[in-house]
Length: 248
Image (tube, rainbow, N blue to C red; front, top):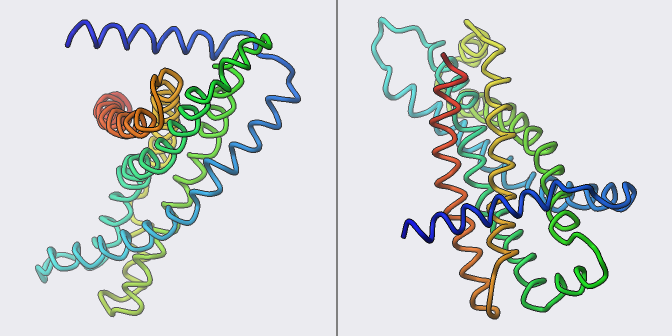
């Protein structure tokens, strides 16, 4: 088990070394990055919006249910929803969702290229396949995942507002006041910083399992599963470390 861990650890960092080696033509990488922004970022917009709306609404309902003490002001519901979204959900929970959607897609795509010998063909032509295939995905995710995080924050807060307005949970004015109360802009930078690290973890771990797959279609499926599981575990570990460092 320990030997297996160290072997994969070494192969992972060797792959990173190849990824960040001197790239080829800038124009090719630019086009690839724009394509990956659409594939990894824009195509994930819908699921992030839908989940964030419902989560914001649910947190609002649950918070109001748990603070029915008449001595506690109603605007605390808005404070709790805001802090829950900014500190944890819009960064870590959205990253876990993207690990499932984006991570499995990356592992499957690169894995199929491996088993169909497309990667071998790139190597024969003298192309740095690791850099060509993976670096644009890293750049696109590191740039666009924080955008998805910001969108999740905004939409989640709006979902909470809708639950107040339509469900008569608390007066919407109290909810808005709670969102503004004792707001620390550092919460946003904290969430975006975590999201950058999560983006790097999701893409590189998923690409690693796809790039080193051996066998056929069944092994590609297994590599996708491993990519999602290991990315999720590392995201939770990174969350613990980054929270300890950034929220001192």
